[in-house]
Image (cartoon, rainbow, N blue to C red):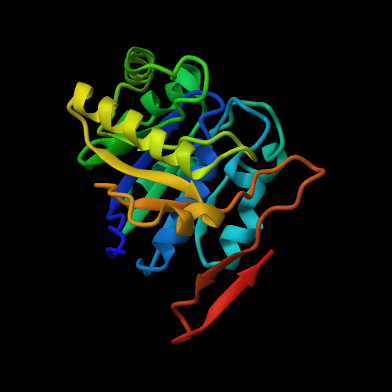
Length: 249
């Protein structure tokens, strides 16, 4: 089996996508994965639309791994209100090695990005669109492209790459991942934008064998689950202690 390709991101990385694409789960797992290589990783919760399954729900996990998390003010943490903390623009102006922005779904959620135009000025922005071909509206290349245009128009920023997040929840199989990679590769060719990486459930990564993916694979361990399910335990190497690790449930 060949060595896996590494995800290489820096500066400001904006994660967008349609409702139900799994972008917040991707953002959480991406932050944890990048924390292994980066001295400092910051996550900004910019989902001001959807009151469920937001980055803030994983705040204790992220903080346990020394990931800086910028959230709405405490009184509005669980509110369904478009409250933008002043700390957000400050963090964007000084992004450090890696700052990940988790943005609300569809063009409605992406509208908040337009209000941060002054903070973005002078910075290179990677805006990555998460796509699950097993969801309505993004089950075709044309649908993904249409969603991209809507998000770009609302955000006043351009999508710079794709994240393939093909899954069928508990029914996901290695075939689901392989087919999703094929779809994302076709989307990349049609759009002229790179496929930054794809995802796969951690439990299935070993089953993919020598599959020839020409992009990195981000292992996903679900953290945003319904109340009757438990989040998966994540072990991330602790850079402060050589050979050490932190196991968080």
